[in-house]
Length: 265
Figure (cartoon, rainbow, N blue to C red):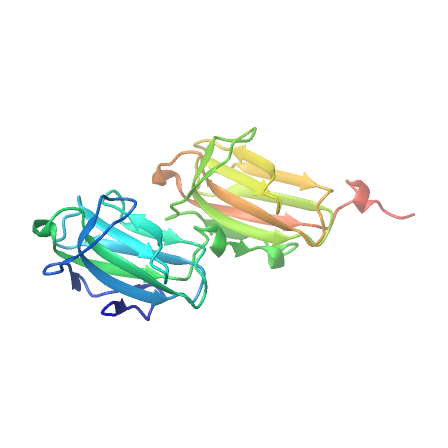
């Protein structure tokens, strides 16, 4: 009943070191630590299915800090220990209340202050925040970036590294059986480009190198009209210094270079 309600979840951060575990006495079990001692409680009502919660340490000991996220029934749905500072969920139920506790794995001597940030508007660093490219088809090419992206995806397919790091997500709905898709790297290096259908089948998977200006092209005459397709752009290397910009061009009107574009005589 004393949980602090977090009502602003749109890229909100508390004042620096606004919260503290000093003087707290509760204790919780968790999946990522043997226990959470000296815990303090927060709650929020889900406005979207996404939540990104981050803790920045003040005087609380980072080596022993723990945060647990629970649903309204008290069931743990996420846990973050000292090795990380962020907890992300993409499957919350809109309208439901969720509760989180922050504390220490050990005793009160490791208590201290912390800053809390919470955001429920996903970026395209996550699939749920993918950018819709449908309205850019047959329009001018557009420039995008994966700078600051954090996710990684398993991409075990021919032509690719086994993981796509620093990935960003995009989608488009096919309006024609034909698609000519081109991605040209700007400052992005060691690029990895993955195209999937709505059943998660990989249609294209290609990796680049340390050069810029690399062109990735995918042409198909067998797109399913009305189906959604998903594009992942990132790096084959996990090093963030290779993140950068790239340009996407899409065309679904075939020329007579293809059967579908045959000129009627």
